[in-house]
Length: 184
Image 1 (cartoon, helix red, strand yellow):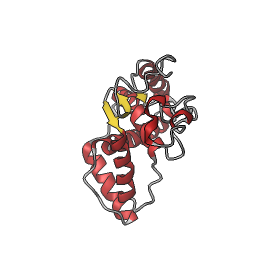
Image 2 (cartoon, rainbow, N blue to C red):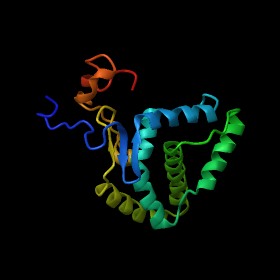
Image 3 (cartoon, one colour):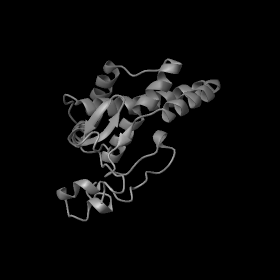
Image 4 (tube, helix red, strand yellow):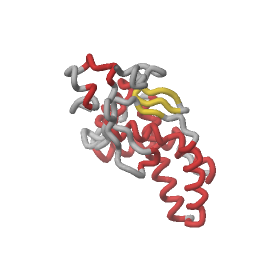
């Protein structure tokens, strides 16, 4: 049925939660990232799977805007931020996984770009134009079993009508048809 409706699930990248120009990120990597944010913040993170997937899918567009205006986030800034958050929250600073680093890079870059736009209002139109161009050419995709955030976060996440109908064996057989069930 799914093939007849043209829904290849995530056949191009099986097992991937997010596919972007920066790489593919598995469901396990997303889960690891959420768990690592909880470790760092001693359980006070507030970053869930949906926020993690949205940060990854928007990362290439934010990087394009950052490159256009000379704003970037270094690995040293990521490490420093994790150490500061862990110290304030009473958490730990684990060795960050690849997805965790990219999610944090995306979040920090979004914050830095917002600060840059506030300090340089004349640059906002250029930033918006670069973001729109990057969004138009983006190949970022989230596995259809998950809610689909808008690129740039300008709209609420949309729940897919059929979800990932091909992978229904992980939960209640009807859960995949209803968008993946309540655990997502």
